[in-house]
Length: 127
Picture 1 (cartoon, rainbow, N blue to C red):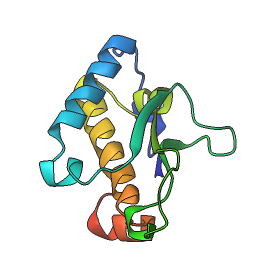
Picture 2 (tube, rainbow, N blue to C red):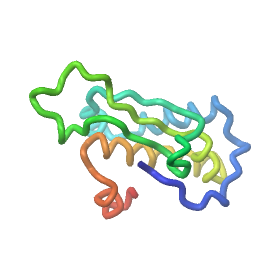
Picture 3 (tube, helix red, strand yellow):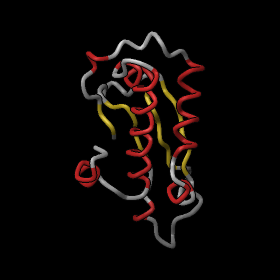
């Protein structure tokens, strides 16, 4: 789960739904092939806001990580990665920063799908 840093920097009046969706598409397309080729049974969603019990998160992975799947894995609903639009917009000063934060959040959540936990992500500089 990726969390908000300094929200006071943002404003977000520059990013309507179409702009935001386009930036998400660009960020997904920029992921390395070796990452996207290993995505398995995962769906991506955009929601306006995170759940009330975790108001400071930017994204959320829910599912069974690839490293925890075994031979019995099958006939299960897809894992989900949800990006939370309003907090992402709030922590960016402009469209370039918003793209960067979207990309970082996608990488962070995809890493969870690959079985990398928050501690390891922080060590790698993606926390």
